[in-house]
Length: 288
Image (tube, rainbow, N blue to C red):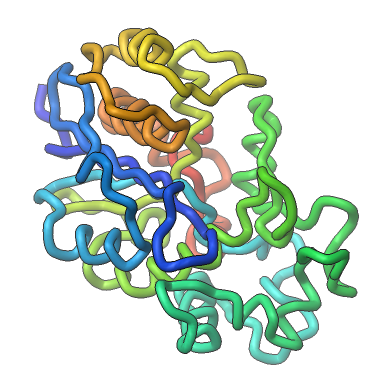
């Protein structure tokens, strides 16, 4: 069988403050059944490190999954940031806006955007600071996140920046990353899936864990035995033991193997409802 991609990369991303983030992990595998391996095992990545690796060392014809939300909700209000004259009309313009306002923030951080007097109205932030346009108790959701809920998952709004499960900070830093990758790689679904070359897309590591047999309530693994059991279930050989196990490294390894297992499924590249939001909200690869 001829495969569309030659390599599969999963990146557990982080929006944490600081020059380097222990929460970032990068794993890669090729076609076949060999288990993915961590890229630079033991290395504490910065977000700039990831950008440099993607633009200088990524193998050709790679499918790259980034564990982040690539855009804000748009369809529900017809705008990302209703009430603000500068609210963008599509995802690329959103990434450019975040990057421009946060231009002085080092390491692709986005605190300046979060603190912007207009943008901050839409976020729930630490210290009980809730913007007057933050919606409801949980925040607005994209169509792909609504579809995730229909599949029994528990996605969070990226307008929420509070709590251990929040994804807003990683989404904002990820938008700055995507702004820099735009034009270098196809960014699906903002770009159509090309017939060759590398493709970058959004992933949700819990999808891989559930596909590998983990219960929806416990998708994190922190030991080698659990990771090997999940890898075997996804059609991969066991992994080479790690010096240290974290849920970030196991998420990346398992999700890389999952991407290899499902990348040639045409239905995952054409989920219902995608066309209406492909340019604005994007989509999480693997959500049907």
